[in-house]
Image 1 (cartoon, rainbow over the protein chains, first blue to last red):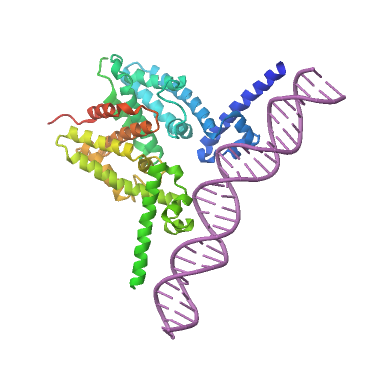
Image 2 (image 1 turned 180 degrees about the vertical axis):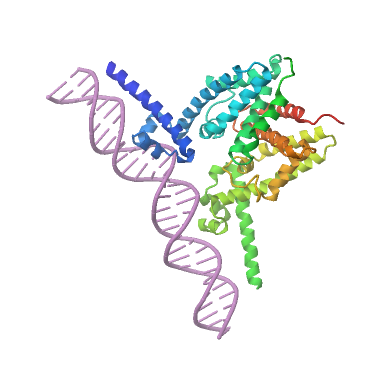
Length: 194
Length: 194
DNA sequence: AGTTCATTCTAGCAGCGCTAGACGCTCTAG
DNA sequence: CTAGAGCGTCTAGCGCTGCTAGAATGAACT
């Protein structure tokens, strides 16, 4: 059965190759440039091969986005754990989030802007999405009120997302992003206990 | 010359007809359904007529968005002026903004989500856009610090935009939108002086 | 070595935004 | 009142998109 195994292994590699190629092409030229023909050419197979791995273009974007959530969760985690006070952790996480959005706009777009493709607040929400959200909850709380679980995180996240996409779309000047984060952190930092 | 005048008048009417038809079609079936063929059919002209009025599909979307800004500015203004205290005005404006986004999602999308099509913070920013932004500045200030002009408004606007689009994209549950607004208002209300 | 079967490719469909060039109608000037 | 100029509209078509049916290929198993 080793022949079959080898083929499955090759298949898995090609699966990942498609995802990576799609992400790289999107990051280099934007999602508009990611057509099935160009993507197929890039992985050096014909178009129909893509459809033997993914149900359609949407599914490819979904796979790219899912990997993105793992990256984002890791970066937010690293940033917040490097600080001691909660306020510093909040600012560090916010900065990590905005940097991620600014530095990898195409990936961010697949995750948070394109027509929904991943189930967010639902029973079958992928663990990477839950992990990313949990990172935000960890820095803004609340930690003592079950009823409000997630509310602060949602609003803080919403604010970060809002200014990230408005800046990216040139609807807001990019230069004051640091000041905006400072203001946001000041307003959302938990009551000082340190 | 009245014949020429009549023709120009008819042309202006048709211009508006195209914009209205595009908005209605988008609001009914989403922007994906707004193809030049379907739009032409709806206004009962052939495709090329659209291009004698607008440079391309982008320009039509731009015209729709521009009208939207006038509506939004008017609704925010009406909402904030109906309240006395600044905190109530802030909440009312926020609610008006979120309601606008929720009730007219396609129009909102053209204004704030689609690839930039109107110059926002620039010298030739249309007055409707300036007016809408000025409404937000009016309720969040600051009014005494030239250097910070617009910063509070940008962050408050960003937060409203963020939760609006995340809810619309099913990335955040819709049911707690009121609680989110309350939290946001509490954090952004100017120091109590009333 | 012959057969089976999975896999990949060629070719094509319907629809997209957009445009060139032919056609027809209206308005103007003599 | 008629002839002609010019504007406006339409038909037809280009190159592209996501996606797929069916032919052709090649590797693996008996």
